[in-house]
Length: 540
Ligand code: TEU
Ligand code: CA
Image (cartoon, rainbow, N blue to C red; front, top):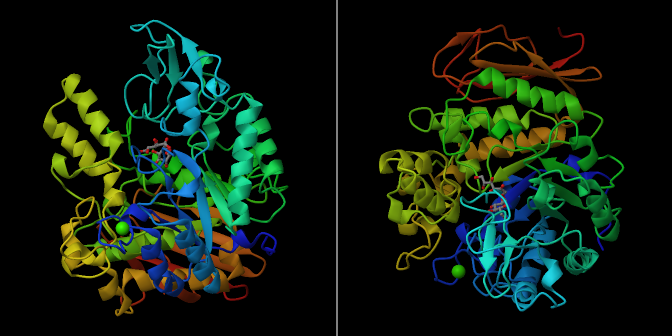
């Protein structure tokens, strides 16, 4: 096992790869492990420390690999175990570690455990899953799947329903069965021995569910389970661990990311990602900036010294941030840099999702070009409920997960360098690859790519960026996001204009570390303008 420097992940920047969409190496139109290995130099140039790899295990791909049929093997679609080991080795050479995605809440219905479980109530694997007796037309209760419809699926041969909080091909594991937990711990140790640097834990806040009480997130035994999980696996090994926890809040976050290491290094919380929606994600509303500022400020101050934040705008489930909180038209480059600057000025571990560093945008496809089960199930449900096709398509285009999953745009050749020109990629390439691609940006010092690279260098260079305390300024201002970070004699001043009109502002004297227009602003922030100023004490 690798000997990690204590809390190394507090200084790290993580890059998320969604393998299907990153780089195809063998001409089947699907990204794969050798493809990722072939792009490690690109990631090394960006300056990241670790790759969070979305699932590459054997899977029928009902939910993009988050439906695992064998936890200990690589899906042939992505390559072989040797390809995986090669990626780990080649990453290591460049100082880049691999963070595996653990999906412990559910398996695929094609997992050997579930196939056994379905055979009968006396089967030793039956109790690995969550079953309730019932009748064909009467589910145990009203619990709903995250992917539309009931969370219960009937198996006539057993006269029972099984629980699936996601697709019906993702039956939920029964964590109250100690055998299930031990199996999972064994499996995690298997990956630790392969030399990975850490884990991202999918919907981990749901494993303590109590479906009869309609409790899915933050169940009563959750933290007992998580402490047991850490103690039996990665606990005390210095790895980076990040739990996905939509149900987290400031009350429970210090438990999840307890500095004593009893659970995880940090969690992904999503409060800042649901501010621009009504009750459901499919009904987006415009963002009110003060809400975002107050939310991020709350997490910055709330976890300072008591836990650790993850910092992110994007992942494989979210629409592209430049299309969401920025401007993907006239001000695409400027606003993508502004959003990066605001996030990378905060305390926590930043995560960059593939293509974010290029300012990749949402897509506007017709229905037949979308692939994601969440979107396709929603189309079915909402058309039955009488929504117009127009409003359904608008929802998918704005918030559908495929926005994040279109192929990585490497260059301006057909298929954007993601796969060779004569094959059809599994999902269409965003037609804007001719103007938005890595090749162009690598050779342009002023590109979004190089802006992200510089932000990473700054984080590594200035302790105030990594550790400083946070203070929100101009809290009520509807256009400007302004804050300070403080550490000893050093102060960092960050200001950003989130809108397309000029705004005057007093900028303190100091050293401008980074800014997103050609010239440094002076008393006015232009559309989407942002800067970071370092003020040494005595200078004010
Ligand atoms: O996502 C958790 C989750 O709750 C998602 O359904 C989320 O609410 C939705 O995608 C937002 O649009 C995790 C994975 O990140 C996701 O890709 C998986 O589909 C899901 O778990 C099931 O494993
Ligand atoms: Ca391939």
